[in-house]
Structure formats: C-alpha cells, structure tokens
Image 1 (cartoon, rainbow, N blue to C red):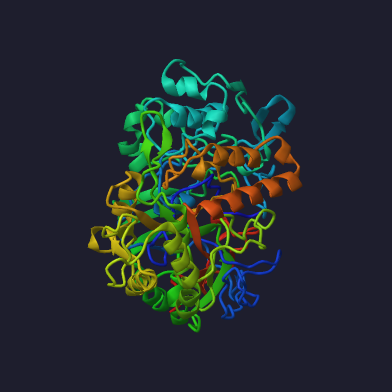
Image 2 (cartoon, helix red, strand yellow):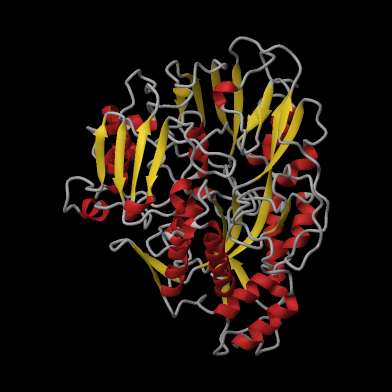
Length: 607
C-alpha cells in the first residue's frame, strides 16, 4: 500500500479549532466503512451530530498534462509559531516536527488501510504470541542517505535511546516497559536491554512480557523506526536533542534529505539518491512556515502546492478556486477537554491522582461537558466538516469505533441539574454558582491561540458555561501560544484547571499510551485500578479475538464517559487543498501518495 508515514502512538497534535495549529488533529464522524470522507449527510442524533450536510469531496485527484523532469514542490507548514526542529523520531514531541520528519521518515514498517503492519515495508514483523516474542527482519538492501547500509544495530539503537537512563522524552512509557529488561536498563542496573537480541545483521528478536493484538498496530512496546547508530553513537543521549545530527544534518531512510535549514522558519529538502524505493521524481521540496491566517491566500495566489493542515473554518475561501482541488479524509485524532485531577511524578514516572483536586468532582465535569453547544459550532464554522465526538476512538478506526455511543450532547438543563446535585449553587443571586462551601468559584481554562475565529469559538463556550452558572476564566487571561500551552499542560501548571487540546492517535488505537498510569501523555493525571484493568484488557492475549477486543474497547469507553476526566469534543474531516500542477495525488489512508511518487506538470504552482 501507499502511505506517507508511520507515526507510532503519538504526539500531541494541536487543534485548528480553538486551540490549534498543529499538523494532525481529529477525525470526522463518517460512520460508513468504505465511504469517501465527507460524502454522507450528517443528521441530528442523540449523540449530538451536526445537522448540516457535509460537502462531497474526493480523496484523490489526477490533473492533466505531462510531468516535467524534477521540479521543486512548495509546502506550507501552517503554524503561528516557529517549529522547534527536533529531527529524530525518538525525540520529537509535536506535530510540527512530525511534518518536518514526514519527508525523511526513518520508518521501517508499512501499514495497510486499517493501520496494521504489513510485510511491504523496509522490515517485516513476525509474531510468536505463544512465546511472547517478535522478530524484525530487514527485507531489502536499504541504505541511509549517506550511503551506509541499514543494519539490525540501527533498529536496536532506537530502543537503546528511548530506554536510556538519560532519556527524558515521552516515548518511554508503560508500553515500552513491556519489553523484558527495559526497566532495568532504564534504572541503570543493566548495560543492555536483555529482551532485545541481535540475530544477525538484518534480524532482531524482542522478548516481551506479553504480546497482544496491539503489536500489529505498533503497540506492546514495538518501535517503528530505526536510528543511524553510526552517526549518533558517540553523542551522549542527554545531548542528542541539541546535537547537529538531530537539529541540522540528520541522516534519513526517507525519500528526501535535509539540504538547507533556517531555524524555526524553513527547510529545503533534496532527493535521497539512496532511497530504497527508487529515486524520487521531485528534485526538491521547500517547506516554509506560514501563519494560519495567511495559508488560504498563499494557496490562492500560487505560492504553495500543499499545506500541512488547512483550517476548516476557511473552507469557503478555497472550495471554488480554479487552481486548487480540495481533497478530504477522516483524521486519526479527536479534540478533547481535559480536567487536571493530579500530577506527574517524574521521579517514579507515573501519574498520581489527587482526590482533593479542584476538578475531581465527577458531576462537575459531566455538567461542563453537557453545557457546551458543539453542534452550533460545527454548523456555523465548519460547514458540516466537524461533528461532536462521541467516543475516544476516532471513526477512522472503523473496526473499533463504536458508533452506538451517545457521548455528551448539548443539554444545559441537565448540566444545571448535575451542578445542583453536586452542591454548586448560586448563593448570592448573581447568576454565578458558588462552590460546595458557598465560596466564590471560578475555573481556569487553558486554550491555544489561533485565528479570530478560534477566539470567537472559545468565547462562545465560555458563554455556554456562564449560561449554566459557571465562571470560566482563561488561564493567563488570554489564549496561549502553542509551545507555551503544552509546556504549561505538561508541567501541570497550577493555573490550569481544565484545558482543550487534541490527540493524534497515530496508527495504534490502543489508549494505553494516552491514559495509562505510566503514560506521560495522560495530562489529566487520572489513574484508578479499574481504569488500568480496562486498559490492560484491550491489549490482553484474550483480545487477540477481535470480538473480545471490541468488547474491551466498549467497556473502557463507557467507563471514561462516566468519569469524564477527558471529554471528546470533535471528530473532524481533514481537508487538503492541492495545487493543480501536481499530477496525481491521493490522501486515502489505504493508498496515500508517497513523497517519492509526487510529480508536477509545471515549473511553478498554478495561480
């Protein structure tokens, strides 16, 4: 199959809606397996779907004309912030850097339309579930962009970076600890990860405490990239993130390699002549940061061919342009509201829930969820391309997304009743509720800065909450810039009681890496024994039976709905404007055009 990238579980992807500006956000709510995204009418349901009809958009385009030799593709990285430029898969932490890495991916696996590992990538995966082992075999004579052969040592080195005692990144989590010997290596009591064995120069065997169906989606601790050991091995792990091989001259397995870089602003890529699938048809790709508010105009005037993400609120501005074709697909992500109910214990590497946290009141959280009119926002601002999310598994995962879940529909009267039951009442008659002790009560809400539309949406939600008697104030008094926002969220800033963000799930629907006790991404910091049992059931041996796993997902979803520590807000359709000088382009998850295949029919983008 054709697919641009392999991103294991991941990263925080900020939303284009109220808070965001990141590359991979949420999904739409298409419920029909096999439908092209955006083709079916979305009707009003008890789960809170929008009432508008989504536009009919294809997921592929073919343009007339003969392809020219070479050419330079112009790519806009839609962002209101400079990119951080961490160009190593093991270390990057945000969607902007994921976009930068997309052109020079070090992925070793390929996946199919259901995001399951196939045998068509650089490496194939053999699973021995009975003995809790997997074998990774390099299938081709693959070379790094400097001509050095890829070996088993490079695959192992990725694990050694993530598991190293000095590694402070986000990928050492409960999943990774499933690898035998990972914990000892992390603690510094072992020099190697005992469960990882080099069989020969092309083969690695990994022993795990368990092997579950999540292994085929990159779960159970399996890592989907290689790291160039010959370039990185002499750099201390603690210094990698600031090193030139990570920031300025990374070596790649992907179709393109870095040629020129202006920190935070632009990158020029050139062909990787050693690319294992053949020399790319394009000669260069030039990526530049473009503010979200300017992306539409830049595409209209032919300054760029493609963009990393396009605001759905601006769909009307591009849908009728003659130089563009607007494609669409469901995103593997969802927007959510999270409630801070604990802290991250960095020493122990676990989340710790505080029973006395301000937001540790189940009915208060449920009331906040029922109070927001997501349906109106979807209709007024997103032309039916956004619908209320009813679950924490995006519809793109058709095998596990449960469309029968109702979620939190807009019901202000129910919100008021829940607040009354919880003891939050308007004691002094000013329209704003006091806390259970009759004291002034306000909630600090963190949201990311974006366009004027985003600010309007956030203010609309604040009014929704005020309508049910809740005083919700913005953390810092304003929307927060992307990088600062996540710095505060990750640090459990005491000024944040609740926040709105988004998760890009990557190809693995398993929620362990986002909601587990050892998951650094568990930003709500909610942990209970019951939750851990439910997460374990999803990735258990019993869940190898698909029906069993579907039931386990359902049980976890119902529990999360009741607890309401993370409330899904939006599923969304991603729209992708494509300049008509690109010959063929598909965004279908099962048949995505890869970068080495892209070719153009003119020297410059069509205006």
